[in-house]
Image 1 (cartoon, helix red, strand yellow):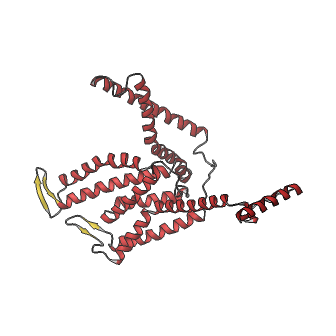
Image 2 (cartoon, helix red, strand yellow):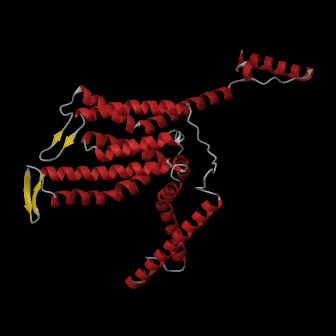
Image 3 (cartoon, helix red, strand yellow):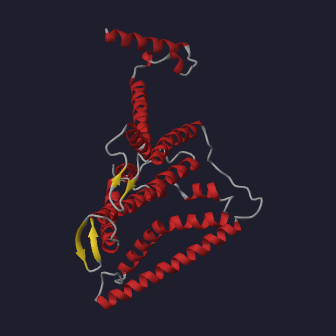
Length: 343
């Protein structure tokens, strides 16, 4: 699946989308249990691949974040010396097993959170965010929506500028080191100028439309229907199971002064927490798979009905057509000829 495709979860109400991403992001950033982090990574990776394709996910999220993960994983044990299992000594102090493991956990939490944010940017569009918070905090919602759009638009515009500069021989790949630095400064100057002009144009456009004025009405295409209610109920039920395990310590993790992982050995409550959290993390992906299965069944049924002879289709589904006597005789002759041929 290399191309971006429509997704049934993205078509849900913005409140459902925002609640889901808020749930998975906060849990991923504040719960350091290794099993929960592994499930969160698997759910985020599968959903990101469904939304953007595996090439984009591997190129940007996987390969781009590995150096940052390595830096975070090594910085923590180099400067934090908690723990009781000393492995070796550096000039900064002892390096412990607990500090190394917690550094890897911190790097994993950072990576998984960025992976979920990539899914968030695909699902929670600007119009959804403004719909949710435009009336409550209009100025802040506009600023945040612009910030969320800034990175992808910035990178796209940079490609356009680089292509135009490359055509006149002023790209970063042209010339010696000094010339490359000058070309880079020129690219950066053009990009910053474009960003500032774009921000001013957006601000003037929103002001001209009366954005933020008291009593201003807004058109919305979003409606909270029965499907959204069912999805919200399922997510709330799974969340209740997870938080009950967090409260009782079945999904807790401690790395100082020694490593203690809750739920190991496995207990019935920890299994329930793991299954509930897996259901939350894989919910959009499984919902998309269910949509694909239903679509294939309907498509196969439609193709089968389209290929059936006219006399084997349901009479009630065929349109009533007023025919002349000659047309009726012709149809009767065709019917007899088909049956005679089949026999």
